[in-house]
Amino acid sequence: MKTIYFAIAALVLFASCDGGSEKKYKQESLGNINTLQVIMTNALWQDSVGEEVRKRFASPAYGLPQDEPIFSMNQMPPETYTGFARKYRLFLHVTIADKDTVAIRKNPYAKPQIGAFITSTTPEGLIKLIESNYESIIKAYQSAEIKERQRRTSISMRNTDSLKNDLGIKLEIPSAYKISKAEKDFYWMQKKLKHGTTNVIVYEVPLSQIPNDSTTIGAIIKMRDSIGINKMPVEDDGQFITEEAYAPYLFESEIDGKFAWETKGTWEVKGRYMAGPFVNFAIRDEKNNRYIVIEGFTHAPSVAKRDLQFELESILRSAKID
Image 1 (cartoon, rainbow, N blue to C red):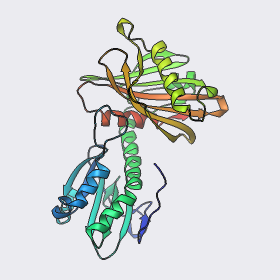
Image 2: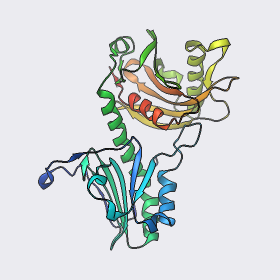
Image 3: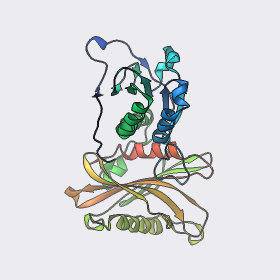
Image 4: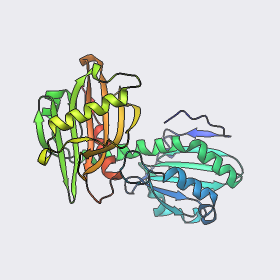
């Protein structure tokens, strides 16, 4: 996400609310992954302020074949935001007050929890603050949700020592994933769903294969397609490739302290009605003169895929490279 310059009276980022006099028992938070509780009056929610919140926090997530919102949202008025309601893991608190403020707070009422508080003297002021700060708030929410998803994974993990021995990378992956293919230079792990599968693949390519210039995305597509065709056979000579109709999204990212190209888009089996989302990280491993490539993709026809892909992304972001 691009750098944002804040033009507000106050912006406060709290690392934690657990220190000092706040050292007391915090109830355990709850909520489904990527579910956001929005606290504002019904009047604001039904007017332009609520529309701005929906525009920013329920916009389509990147890299999915059908539109699905970044967050699933529930709204409630401030007077009902007490007791049990304060246990939700993510919340956005938007109210009219006597000054303009934006604050992102960690664990204000429960653990783990991230809350964003926005106040202004007018509805128009609230809209401006949301517009100026939504990207940093979403970044804080998503970082917290990745950690929560990884915490849930850690309860029951698959042993990946063979992956570490062959490719020098460790992943925290749920025990529900089974190894479908294991070679010295290519691993494919898969979890069966009621309707389809989620998949993780790992391989490596030389540093020279992905240039850092205007041809980067083309090189990544070529790399993916080569792996799909040669390592991932499909019945009746089908080819597992990057969807040809639309170019994937490309971002600069970081995994295990190393630079990575992050690519989100859609895969397809050429000539067939088979497709789904993927997220790919090509991690620059200069010490070993290579990119180590990790990818998660979903094949789940007629099923919402946002949270499936989010689980895969949390697995990939757990990577540790020797």
